[in-house]
Structure formats: C-alpha cells, structure tokens
Amino acid sequence: MRALIRVAGVLVVAATAQLAGCGDDSAMGTGNGGTQGGLGSHDGATGGATGTGGRGSGPPAWTELAAPMLTVDGGRAATGSGHGSAGGAIKIRVSGPATFDPALAPASADAPAGAAAIGADALASDVNADGSIRISGIIIVPGGDAVRKIASTGDIYVDGTLRAADVAGTRQALSLSAPNGTVFVSGAVDTSGDVNGQTGGAIDITAKRVVVTGRLASAGGNDAVAPGGAGAVTITSATDVVLAGLVRLRGGAATGNAAGGAAATLRIEAAGAVQLGGTIDGRGGPSTGGGDGGPAGAIHIGETTPPSSLQVLVPMASNGGGGSAAGGEGGAIQVDAAGAIALSGAIHADGGSIVDAAPGTAAAGDGGTAGSVTLTVTSAPDTLVVASSAEVTLDGGTSRGAGLAGGGGHLYFITNDGDLSMAGKLTGRGGAAPDAGGVGGLGGMFNLFSDNNHNGLGGNMTIEATGLIDVSGGPGTTGGNARNDGGWGIAVFPELQEQIAVLLNSDGIHGTPPVGSALCMNYGRIVARGGATNGWGGDVIYHGNGMDQKDPVSGNVEVAGDGTGQTGQFGGE
Image (tube, helix red, strand yellow):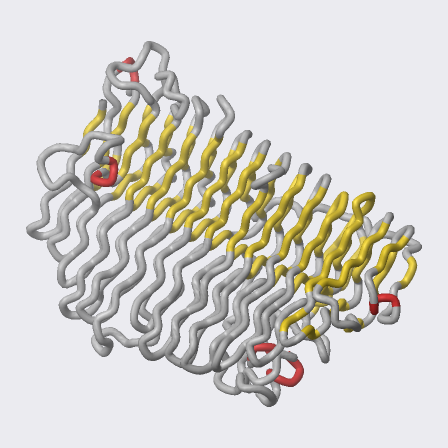
C-alpha cells in the first residue's frame, strides 16, 4: 500500500507497504498474517502469504487500524483466561495553543535538493557527513554496533528503507542527527523486531526540524513463547515537528499461551510547532493463545521543551484492552496548554470489554473501568472551547456472566478565568452487564471548572444547546448507579467530589461570588440516570452565578433512578 501525500505542491509517494526483506509489518496487516495466512515471518511478503518461518505460526493476531489515529490502547487477550491490559498515558505540555481538529490542513514541507547519496558501504560505521545526504533504495545496515549513528551538517533525507542490523538477537538502534537542517523521512526508518520475539531497536532523531511522511517502525517481533517489546522513539527538534506518516511502536503479538509484548514510548521535544496528522500506533501486543495483553505504550510531548503550538488532526485513544477474562482499564490523557484549547475531534479512554464470548455463554468476567481525560488551560484568561463535532468517551467496559461492568471515567476541563464553552458530546457511562446476575457499571465523574486560580471571578461556563454530558449508570440484572451521596442531599466538594456525577464550577471561592463574576449556564442536556434495573440517579451541582446574580438554574438535567432506584439531586449555588 502507498500513501499519496501532497507536500508543497508536489505529490509524494510515501512507502507504507512492506518491502521484501524488511522487518516492519505492512499497513494492511500482511506482516502479521493480515487477513489470511499466518504470523510466521515478520516479513509481510512471506508471513502474510504463507505463514512460514519461526515459532510465530498461527492465526492472525493483529488488527490493523482502519484510519489514522494516535493510540496507546492496552493489549487484547482474545482467548482462554487472558486479561486485557490497561491503556497507556498520553501526556502533552504546550507553551501556546493546542488544537484538536480533523479539518485542519496538513503542514507543507519542502524536500531537500542536491543531497549526496549514502550507500550500505558507508553505513558499515558511523557517518559524519558535511552537507546534505540522501538514503535511497533498500539498505540493511551492516555491522554489529548496538547503535548506528548518522549525522549531517545539512539535511538528511530518507526516501528508501533504512533497516537496522540484527545484533545478538535484538535490532540495532538508529540515530539520525541534523542539528543545522531537517530530517525528512518519506520512506522508512525500520528497527522493528523480526520473528521469534526479537526486541525492536530505539530510533532517535535530532534536528533543527523533523518531517515524517513515511514510516518510523520499532515494533516488537511476534512469537508464541516470548513476543518482543518495541524500541523507544525520540524526536528532538529546535523548531517544528510534522508527523504525517506512520510511527509504529507497538508490542509483538503472542500467538501461543504467552503475554503480548510491551509497546514503547514516543517522546517529542520541540521548541516550535508540532503537528500530528498520521498514525502513532503504541498498542500493547495482543495474545491469541490464552495469555494477557501486552503493556501499552505512551506518548509524551513537551516534558522538557514544550512546543509553541500543537495541532492534532486525528483521534486520540487510550482504551483498555479487551480480555477473555477481564477488560483492561482505560488510560490517562492529559493536555496542559499555556494558550487556548480548541477541541473539535475525538478522544477515547474507554474501559476494555470481555471479548469473544456471546452473551449468556461466558463465565463471570469484569469489564474494565474507563480512564481519565484532563484538558487544562494554564494561562489566564485563555479559553477552552469544545465544538459540536467533538466527542470524548470514557465509558466502562462490558462484563459477561455475573460479572461487574466497568465504571465510567473521570473528566476534568479546566481554565484560569477563561470562558469554557461545551457544545460537543461527553460520555462517561457505566458499562453494560448483559448476562444474568451481572451488575452494571458505576457512572463517571465529570468536573468542568473555569476558576482554577480561585479568585472568585472565573470564566463564563456554558453548556451550549448541542452539548450533551452523560454519566449514567450501566444496565444489568442489578443496574449501576450514577454517582450520588446515598441520601437526599449533595456531597460537599472538593472533599467528597467522587460522590458527585457532574460539577459545573465557575466560582473557585467559598460563599457568595463577587458581583460581575462568571455565569454558569446549561442550555444543553446533562444526563446522570440510574441504570436498569434499579440503579440510582446521580447528583448534579452548579457553582457560580446564574442570571441577575441569582443561583444558577438546572436547565435540562435528567437524574431519574430506575425502578426502585432513588432519583438523584440537583443543586445550584
């Protein structure tokens, strides 16, 4: 498969398909067996067609992503008594605005001209080149060094496939350095593990600017006995980073009774703009033979050097892995921006469900609890705007048998006196328990807060007409509750905040807010119902000013219990 990418008016053919003899799986899944054949060879041309070679023979384990996205989902455990693993961490720090919008235009990048060709002979040792260099064709790095270093005083352009050497059963690490220029990858930099559980090598790219329209691959190798872990990918840029291709750092698949391999971490440190418009695949390795799913990877951006701005053009996910015995917990997604945050896309951190078992046929298995999403605007009075197209899901996983479904997750949207407008769809519903004796999941806890500097002024808090917040309990033989304090009142916050289903807070001080402080208004719909059967409804509270300095009014709030379940409470103060 090839991706067509328009770069500065030129149509570039980015090689995302498997090249014969190279280690990475193809984007269509043939390297992991695809839709036919086995897992025997890590080479997609062989493994997909025949399934021969190595201990990895068996049914296909990897399901390739249908569309570009950023994912650190937990590993899936499809059979036997396997447990899905927890979703990984996505942690982003930005010194300016952060935008999550699939409608944004991809950044353009000019490829270098007049670069000197570097062949396999030159790569038998480390390369230190004066001027720009180009790596074309298929080059398997010779030599047994643990790390092959390639440095240039100009640009480095990889339009072929640069394949790391096999070093004592692991893959060599590759380092590309162009401190005065740009590292362009329109082909592939490949350190991924081969069959028999080979560990992927690390990839380290340091440059003035980094542009990837092709592929960075460090995935662990598949194996029935001991799947390999992926190698870490680190990108350090003095200015901008554009990732428009594929970064694959997922764990190897287990085709026998073993746990899946561990995915790795992608780290980006960049002083300029960062745009993520392709696929970052940091999923934990699946297990198809009865073992647990492998640990998920992570995405860390700006821990040391926060970028000046961030644009994410694809969905983000940190879901728990599905499991045959138990689903994994959702992961944690955190974005801190010293500038406005605008969310128009999708974010998911759902709990994993029990998989591959028809309702009514499985032994008891619990669904995974959803994770958390925290978006914080650290600069005052910058805004947080959630568009009508935005969707955040923090839903609990489905159980089987007389198991407990996963609980909904935690959501925090925070500003320092900046207006907070929510027109999208936010869900943190308890998971479903469809079988006899099953217990529905607890609803989530959502906190929207526009006065994080606690000066009593705050930003206007508005749930727009299209906005929906749903943190209801999940259905089951015993329905799950939405969060409540168990009585006829509403818990105090922040001390007992876990007993509140939805808190809208535009006033961060105790007592009556000052004149002119922010409004707290709901023109949309807030739902915290009890799950069938007999689940309790949730408690909802607004803290801030209503119109004319009065307590805020509820708007459309649905907190009914089911059957004998108690109805939740609303409070405005």
